[in-house]
Amino acid sequence: MYIELKNINKSFGNFKASQDVSFGVEKGKLVALLGPSGSGKTTILRMLAGLEHQDGGDIYIDGKLVNDVSVQDREIGFVFQSYALFPYLTVAGNIAYGMKIKKKSRQEIEEKVKYLLNLVGLPGLESRYPDQLSGGQRQRVAFARALATEPQLLLLDEPFAAIDAKVRKELRRWLKELIEEVGVTSIFVTHDQDEAVEVADELIITNEGRVEQIGTPFDIYRNPKTPFVAQFIGESVILRDYEYEKIRGYKKQEGASSAAIRPEFVKVVPADSDVEYPNGYMDGVVAHADFRGSNLELTVEVNGLELKAEYVLDEKGLKKGDPVKVFVSRLYTFDEKNAYTVINSSLQTGEIYYI
Ligand SMILES: Nc1ncnc2c1ncn2[C@@H]1O[C@H](COP(=O)(O)OP(=O)(O)OP(=O)(O)O)[C@@H](O)[C@H]1O
Ligand SMILES: [Mg+2]
Image 1 (tube, rainbow, N blue to C red):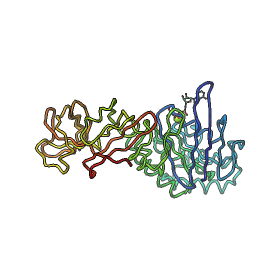
Image 2: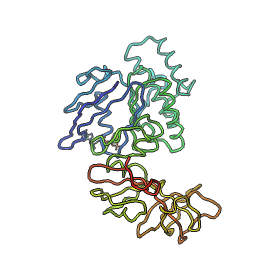
Image 3: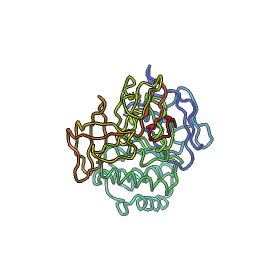
Image 4: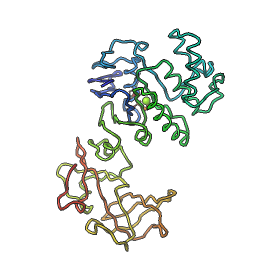
């Protein structure tokens, strides 16, 4: 592992901002720290950078214990959400800042600024000031500045938070390619699931100062391991008190009284449709149908439960009051500690099975 955090604890007064945080990042990987506001993501980055000191536990970079290594000597590049650039310096001045501190020659600096501006797709903007750039351009310059001193590790704290949705989407694709090209190990903080899934090789899910789960986006999405992750990922409907027993294809699982059901695993078809697994379908009725461009966001009533589903719009569509058939292909049950992936038994040869 290139980066390793071992049993990190950090409190602010009585408040535990990091609780026994351990994870590793392989060289050249781009991992995302994903979790709700206040879950301790920035605190982890600041300790990695050396801006904050942990109360206990060890941090290793490239096999070296860095607990007592200063910020300057950790060779880390940063990009933060806002105030990323010095407003009184030009683009070139901003990018050159770290190199000047490192006493690089004038010629080296000029060449590097040029190279980096090309790399981030902004050639020729050397003499502009930050307030003469768009938000997206500013963040690109911030990346160039972070890369200028050839850091071994790049820390990105919600770098696109202040940028509007469309540009943000372009930027994250761009960032992923840039990081692959440069090959720098990077940790990206976000509370946006879509962003994390699209950008990162691996996700580290944080909650209340703890690491809940580590895995590829696919793993975490398909098989959440904790109650928190089961509820946090996706847009789930949560059922309590074994209500999921009312869904055809699922049996009571002693101890796991709650379940999270995501719309993408709820299939809804008009009541007169032919279906592939008739044993697994229930009769229901459309309670709400909200238009979302290419699809409908449905709320359906089945066996006294309200479930959410996506429905790809066809010629007829569906509207409130329409009778439907409903099939739940998978759901996540959970107890106090663990979450379990359960597949509809009609997709199996009998028994419900657990992954
Ligand atoms: N210097 C500090 N003094 C006191 N409390 C702090 C300090 N820094 C962070 N905290 C607290 O620690 C907790 C974790 O903060 P942190 O900034 O790491 O969260 P985050 O996951 O980055 O949240 P966000 O998504 O909102 O940026 C918060 O409750 C915060 O109020
Ligand atoms: Mg933060």
